[in-house]
Amino acid sequence: MVAIKTNDFQHIEARPFAPNLGADIYGVDLSKPVPDDQFAEIRQAFLDYQVLFFKQQSEIPPDLHVTFGKRFGPLHAHPAAPTMDGHPEIFEIHATMDSKIANGEFWHSDVSCDDEPPLGTMLQIHIAPPCGGDTMFSDMYGAYDALSEPVRRMLHGLTAT
Image 1 (tube, rainbow, N blue to C red):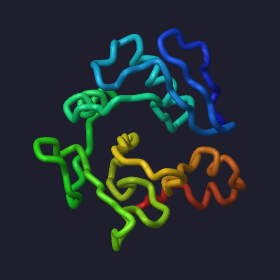
Image 2 (cartoon, rainbow, N blue to C red; image 1 turned 30 degrees about the horizontal axis):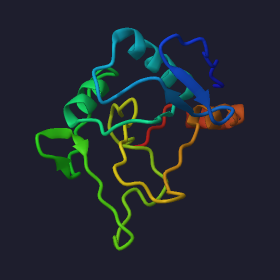
Image 3 (cartoon, one colour; image 1 turned 180 degrees about the vertical axis):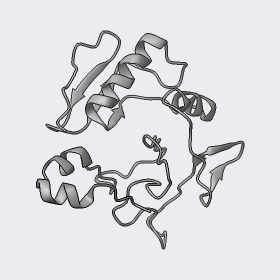
C-alpha cells in the first residue's frame, strides 16, 4: 500500500524524508496540550507517512506524553519492561556505550506478539548520540504489497504469535 501523501496541512508542516515512509513534523509544541485541529492533522500525517519525527521539541512532560498518546487510542503497558514511576505506559530504556545488552538489538516489531498489537510506538530521546544511532523503520505495507500473490495467499491468516 503506497499511501497518498497529504501535504495541505494548515496547522503543521510535514516534510517527507523518503518516498514511502516517514516525515519530519514542524509547527507543533508537544510540551503543551495539542489543540484538536492540530492533532487531527498529526493523526492524518501518521496515517499518510507511518513514522513521524517531531523536530525542535522541548522535553515532553510524562503526563503530556501519555495524554498525547491516548488521543491515538488505548495505551499498552508492557508487562515485562521497566516503566516510569507513576506512568506504567512509559517504558524506560537506558543505554550507554558500556551497556552489555542493547534493547531491541535485533529486528522486531514492538509487541507484535499481542493478540491485538498497539497501533504504534512513541519514542522520546533525552540524550542522542553525536551521530548515527541504530533505530530503523520499515514500511511493512510496502513489503507486503511487493510480495507475489501466491506468497500473500500463503501468509493469509498467519499471526506473529
